[in-house]
Image (cartoon, rainbow, N blue to C red; front, side):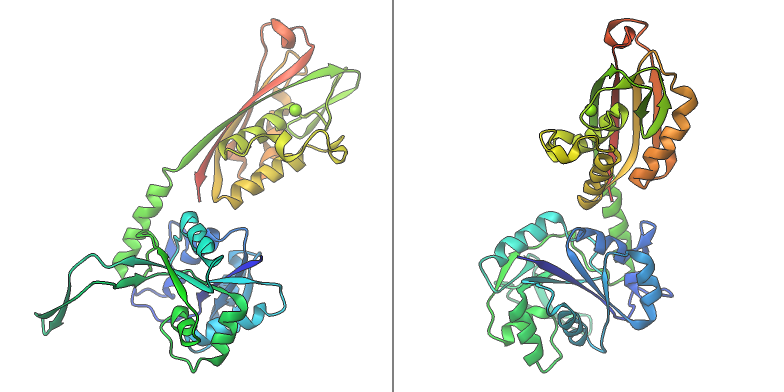
Length: 374
Ligand code: MG
């Protein structure tokens, strides 16, 4: 089962005002579409753009297939569907670029419904009373029973929606209309009030408020690791090779600081520890460079919609002296995680000659990582 998402962003119309179309306007310091694309991280993504926006789109995200849209929404979706032919896609979600906040829970509900239906789409039941108006006066009431406000993403079996679009004469309001015209049943799943479509200037203020609320979504993780000294002439600590009269014993390169930090990130994501993702019983990780573990954890963090707010690693040892290498360690950890070096702290302490670290039998490390939702 391969699911692709088509994000429709070729429109030029701008009821929100401003010098560029609404999907390219800034929201929380990034274009609206950066948020929309991030909501579908890890899936095969197609972004349908106006040809004039190609340079902007190429600067946005490299892991996205760009397709030039047509003159109408139908034509844009059709172009994206045709671009996916032959790529093994079995399901497709079709989403408005100007809806930056489809939640992971909403996407999961949609995909679950799609397992048992040719089409599924989110909607919210209308709860306000409905009036007809005429020149500023209430001219009548409208029964709201059975009425829904439609949202996207709208999901379909790929072959079915491709055939439906090929057969449709054009002019549909959305892909559910195209699907229904072809006789496909579309299941309604529960929508989400935060899955708003940016249409009017006031919608941006609401979206900024939603973003501020998300920034309160902070996750913390800790990591602790110990490696024993053995024969050797160097140790690897936080990605830096330091000459020493001993080495560290371990299945991998025994980089105790990097292991603690990696576990802190896994911990913040409730994703277990290094041993779960890289079992020591698997010979392929013997002698492995520990940056493999840390970059995997950083990738998982991004895929789950989080970024590093900061991290702090403390190495506990009498020797070697860490201070002269701390900046190099911070630089290397930041490089591996692809974050600003200012987010990464490495420091050291001794244990006053007490315990196994004091007797120089090994090195311990503790790490804390804070993650915030992107
Ligand atoms: Mg370890």
